[in-house]
Every structure is written in C-alpha cells, then in structure tokens.
Length: 612
Image 1: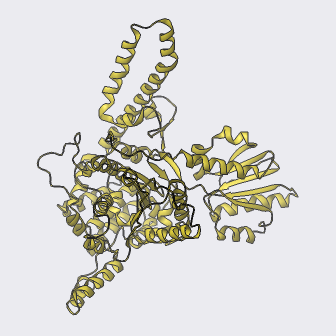
Image 2: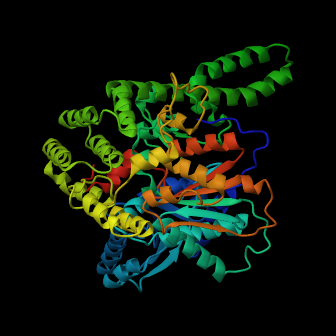
Image 3: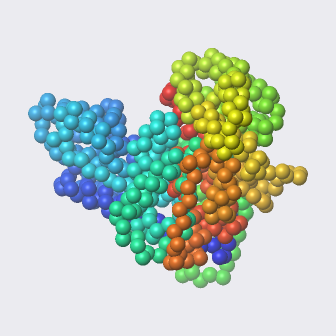
C-alpha cells in the first residue's frame, strides 16, 4: 500500500545510475571478446539482466544467439562462447563438459566466463581440476545492486539466506560490503550507522575496511543519505513467517513477484496467454494501481476524463488527445483490468484455503492465546495435506512464538508431518532446528532449571551473561518477552480501521507490528541502542548491536531524514509497507537494500531438502 508523502519529505537519490553502471560494465566485458559470439546465461540471471540490458542491446554488441545454462548442453555453431553465470560449482562442471567435448572433437574456440557478482576461488579450482583453466578467460561483472523501485534495491541473491543462516557460509559478505562501498562512493558517506546481528556486524566491519583502504574517495562529499541500518533476518523470523495482507505481499505470496515483475496467468488475463507486469512506481500509473480499494474510482476516472475531453476540442486537439493521452489511458485501463483479475484470483484462492481461519490462528499465536486450539488447527492442516510448505510455516511460527515446542508436541507434529508428506522431509527438520526456526524446548531440569540455579550463585551482571550463553546455545527466540517490551501487539478498542491506519500494525490487519520495523523505529528515535539493552539481550545480540556516528557538519537536514535499511537474508513486502508508513508519519524517507525480496514460502523452501 502506498501513502502520499508529506510535502516536506526529502527527495530520494536517483538510482538509475546503478543500472547505467551495470550496463556499461557488461558491455565492456562483452567487447573484450570482439566479433560475433553466443551468450550462455544462467536462469537466475535472466530476469535481472532483462532489467539492465535487453536483447536488442546485447545484439548491438555482437551477441548472436542466447542460450540458457541448463542440464542438457546446447549446440552452438559460434566460434566464440561467452558464459554469464553465478559462481557455482555446477556451472563450472557445465562449462567444463562443453569445453572438453570440443577438445575431444578437435574443435578450437574462444571461451569467456563472466561471474556475477564476483568470482570465487573454488570455481577456479574446479576449472583447473577439469583441465580447462588455461582454455577460458575469467572476468567479474560486479552487478549487485538492481533498482526494483524508486526506493527498493535488491542484490538478487536468494541463496544468501540458506548459505549464511543455515550453512554458515560467509562468502557473500564481501559482496554486501562491496555494494555498500559502491553506494557510499556514489551518494556520499553515511554519517550515522546502526546494526544488529552477526552478519550485519561482519558486513559492516569489512565495508569499513574497504572505505579505509580507499580513503579519500568519499572525503569532502556531502552525504545524501544520513542513516544506514543493517539488520540480520534471524533477528525477526516471525514477520517473515506471517501471512501477508498488503497487496504487493498478497501478489507475491500468490503469483511470486520475480525481479520486480509478476507473470499473470490465464486465470487473471482472461485469455490463453500469460502477461508480465512490472510492479513499481516508475510506471506512470504509479502505486494507485496497487490499491484494490481504489479500483472503482480509477475506472470511473477513466470514463469521466474521456467524456469530458471529448467536448470543446478542435480537430488538432482531438488528434493530439487520441495519439498521446488516450493511449496512456487505455494502457492504464488495461492494467486496471489485470489488477482486478489478480484480486479476484487471490480472493478465490484465499476463500478456498479458508484464509480467515488461518489469519485467526496466526493472530492467536502472535498474542499467545488459545495455543491448544492453534496446535489442533496445525495438526488438521497436516492431516488434510493442504501444503507441505504451509504446514512447516505454521509449525515454525508456533515454535518461535512459544520459544520452542514442548517435547510431546514436537514429536507428535513431526511424526504426523512425516507420515502425511513423506519421510524424505526428515532432513528438513534438522535444517529448521539448526537455524532456530523449529526447536524443541529442553526438558525442565536440563536448561531452564540449571540456568536458574547457576544464576543464583553469581552476580546479576554475570547472571545476564550466563542467560545469554544458554539462550544462544538453545537458539531461543524469547519472542513473547520481546513482544511485551516493544509493544508489538497493539491493544485496540473495537475494530482496527485499515482505511485510516494508526500504526505499522496495519500491514498485519492491526494485529502485530513487525519486530524488525519496531527495532528500527526505536533506534532512530534514540539515535543509538541506549535504553534497548534488555531487548538486545533477549535477541541474543549483546555483543552484536553497534552504532557508529561520525561528526558530519556537511550533512543537511534533508539527508538526515533519508534512511537506508539493509536486510541481510531478505525482506518482505510487509516490512517495506510498514516502514513506508513510518516514514510518512515521522517525515522520513526509507530506502531498502535487501539480499532478495522474500516471503514465508521462500524461507521454508530455502530450508527444505525436498525440492519441488
């Protein structure tokens, strides 16, 4: 949902420069292989590439044919092959098979591998093992910032979440640091930095190291963005696990928004064709099209404007109206029809799934009421085999809000799930446990009681540290205590009026303020973590919350109202909507940088060992 910005709201920086830089660098790399060439593109890079350089631009730079990197090798007749890939081992094997097949056939060609956003040593090792390292030239396309909207930048790295938060793989931290370095080079230094989480701290420290190595590049520059906030996804799993009810979130949950656009199928287009629609504010129709409640008004305006304009025009004016403005109105009308179709399709699916009952259960879990009834609902969900991903999501939400499942419930739900969906999901439970998403409460005398006994023998300060150690060991969420401390569950008299939202809870129908957004709000109010010591402790981050404020005389009052929020591990459309609302209320403008836009299904799929 979009709200009109306050008249005094600061202007956003122009991020179109990032697209131009990425396009120019790619063109430069392609021209390193002069003459006609075939380009092999990894599927994950096709959508981002389309936003940067379309087919006609590639053709202008002597790209003859395009192939998708997939399991079966493509047959190319070109003498020059270029591969645009992510730095993955399987891609190196694919390239090696192709090059070695050419060697066996006695064919000599030129090969170039372009890694995006960076190349890893492991990939070069595989090329060496396969005996083709000397046959290929390797380059990096440092494309890690894709503007999806005027205030939304994505690194398009969905694998970041699993790699770091499950596998503990830190390879993408350098990519994050490089992206932040590029932003500070283009838009000036960030005078005020805040962050929470292990990944946030590591990314921040590496970024600062890069800044120090290239000291002078941003010195003397006037800051355009006054604050930067880095946040780990595992600080707030609850928000990501909740069903989204803002329009963009519903579209993402139902149709999957990919790279800022969505494919509407025949059930929406009312034809036998699918249609790709861009969902952002660059489009002249703006976000008005994303507000379901205004569809009738918009359609009415189209009719009214057309009727009014018909009168009192001379031939030249009518011709101008038909050739220019009418075309825009027809386009707007067409998009309106699509969004109405999307709304109808969402409504049908949600009614079929008994969405109201689902939301009621989620709200009960968030508030800590009727836990037995909620557990029975989840059991029924599993027994009816509604969806393996949805059942997992609800189990994880129950676990985190209750600080782990009691052993009896954990065993019962796990057994029912495996019997219902198959034993192949067993490894998924191990992953969820390791990530702290689905855990079992330790028996009374092994953790909580021991913690209590030890705490009585030491000072209060030491007791706090011992509690932190136990919490970290058990991956405890402490959601209920945090919720109370930060007032995440608003107390509302009567029904929450979604047409006139009063706080960020509107993104979840007034039931819950996203934890991540509340943390950001509280830190910005205080300009530090001061007064939030207990919250930080409950988040198991006593050593991982940081503030760095530099005395910056050049920072204008306008730049100090611009805040860059960096989500490491993905952010949801609900969080984006909530912070946009907060910005409007407080006179801020938020800019979002995320490793990828995520939702509950993507989160569960990242943890799953059973691929759909």
